[in-house]
Image 1 (spheres, chains in turn brown, blue):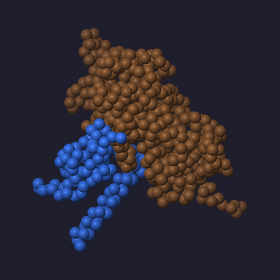
Image 2 (cartoon, one colour; image 1 turned 90 degrees about the horizontal axis):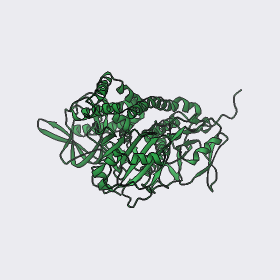
Image 3 (cartoon, chains in turn yellow, brown; image 1 turned 30 degrees about the vertical axis):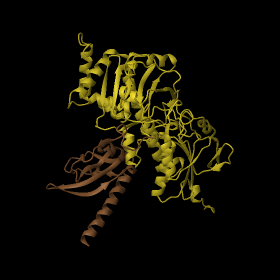
Image 4 (tube, chains in turn yellow, brown; image 1 turned 90 degrees about the vertical axis):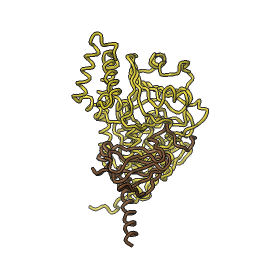
Length: 454
Length: 126
């Protein structure tokens, strides 16, 4: 028998004129989602409202305005954003990165950008460290939030206290405010926000991603010292320090960001890294790490969330699925755009997200599985001195001989910058020419009399 | 906040006044996005150059190289100091296959240029 009261278009799990979208979290994932939702809606002649809920003011320094991140925008993302019409201004980009310097106990090598141009951006997510004296640059997150606002998003500076589903529609309450009903709820809260626990009450199967801790500390050196000592290079360290997987020093405007990744990072591990000859060698002679410097230990996702979507609810960025260790902002962009396209053109049902949004998440997850293999190989190199010597020699030859194929240089560049998919890096690393040259260098590295000749 | 003059430390590549970014007849493997300053689009024929237009900040240039295999149809020259970001053809095409909407703005730009050319033809014939 036919229903005498057919559902209205708004009940049909799709966005229509007048639909309201709530985005919880004003970091890159939330701002990108808001921006693209409004852009796609305009293309589809759809009039929707988008409201971002973000308690922090990113135009402030840490801790209030910070989003706890190394602050590197990969060259792939810089190019994709430029193609989207989103250019990163000099007022936000603290430094354009043009090379990577790999530091190991057996020596160091500079890997120049494959193109004669700076396409990697070093930024601060907020206005800078808590001890910042002069604010010369703006915040990356504040810039993106501003772009979303300019597109028509409304930003509410309030902490969401309660989320519920009323008659199949998400409802949000901020402190001291009335509950607001929406047609779609986008969660872009990352993995460090207390707001993440609010979603546990919603019974649709969502489970947050597994995480690990990182360590970030900001050292003031001054713009001139940074330019002279670190230059426009990101400094990457493969050191045989127990529990340390990866470390980098990223030059910003007046500060250098020290980022560590490893198991149970504690004071001893940080001290061992900072006092290593390799770190001392690339910092000023009279430099002494100030333990009072601005620091944080944010969590990063190492696995994807379970069921990051349902009817009228979707998770974007870190709290959904992100890239392993690298290019989290790039993953935020990809998931945000896929989410916006699905919501505007395919609907906001669980089925629509499963068919059109989930494939993008699966692509990232599959690539992360390859990434794990790649990082395991790096760890092996880290543990074996002869492998480090071989890698150094091969890279140095490629960088010093004009016209030589940049096999290992390209692999390392993509590993460090996060510019390419792990699958692409893996494919390059199993190319016969790469394997042949690496085998030769491995043999040379273990051969007697060759060890001291990198 | 930073001063408005072109920062050599930030993104892109800086070209000085009169410096060519690409020449007509070159094989194009990238497209360009003007970050700061102005770029002249020129056609060169038998030593004579014709200024087609002047592009400003945020504009795409050389985008035809992304979609065809022809050589550059025009030269790009810095008008004053400019900063330009390149977008690699190979990576960009790969990304378009995953997210076709990434090409929307380029299609929009090309559509606008076809419209401008139509107006120009009409003006010349009129």
